[in-house]
Length: 138
Length: 138
DNA sequence: TACACAAATGCAACATTGTTGCATAATATT
DNA sequence: AATATTATGCAACAATGTTGCATTTGTGTA
Ligand SMILES: [Mn+2]
Ligand SMILES: [Mn+2]
Ligand SMILES: [Zn+2]
Ligand SMILES: [Zn+2]
Image 1: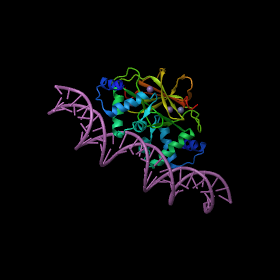
Image 2: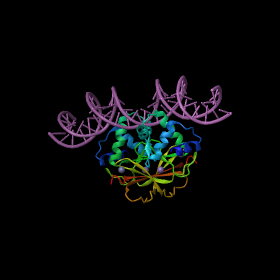
Image 3: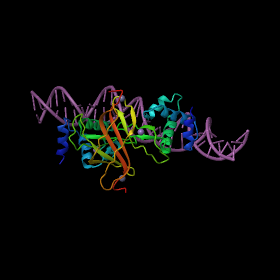
């Protein structure tokens, strides 16, 4: 059942450990984004905070998850569904954060628009974060 | 010379205090965004950290400055140039954050595109944050 | 200008969040 | 099974953010 989890870890040359399996499982179970605090709470068996920080960092580097900017000093993370790889993220979809319940969604089917910048600015990545009321909170 | 500063404060029913004058001055002098830490450093005369937090919060509420989301857990702030007012921000321009020098720019002339969301999502605000290399770092 | 009221500041104490080094434990390789 | 490699947990620390309260400062009025 967790072959998908193990596969993902191995494909990314990561050793298969309890914390990595559990944290990756959380992301797979969830269709919304997770903050560090969410993981700390939901992981059940408690891993050290430091381990969670390091695991998230590793997953981002490997292109397993991507980070989502926020205006409230709490970055969230979500699974990469596209073909992201080490150092190369291609998650160009829009994110939605509910003002009420703070749930953050990856809107995989809403792609980020092209933005034309003034002369001199070199675009690396475009993040679009929409806030408002989600389906449940309307 | 600082009549503009005093005017802005009075127009927003804020009493004119040293810290508010100084912090607002910093924003007026600067064309880029400022994080809490920047203000603490640049304010010269040292105001208590708490005062800076509260001043930033007040300025955001009054529509004097707006906050800019980031993917690195450090929200930045910049002057509102549009007609923002208490509880009603209208800063619908794109922001640019340099990966190299971390400077954050308000691209006042680049307006955020319209984003069409799936059924059920109610849009309140759209934030577009572009990262890459700025003019100085190219 | 002096006074009284209202509001902002500074301080202390605390909470939360994030970072680093290192010994130990777990995993992968042979 | 033995070894080499890597991740984990712990401790100690740094940075960031929050709250209550006494004191100071600013504002409107006498
Ligand atoms: Mn996403
Ligand atoms: Mn701006
Ligand atoms: Zn919601
Ligand atoms: Zn730069």
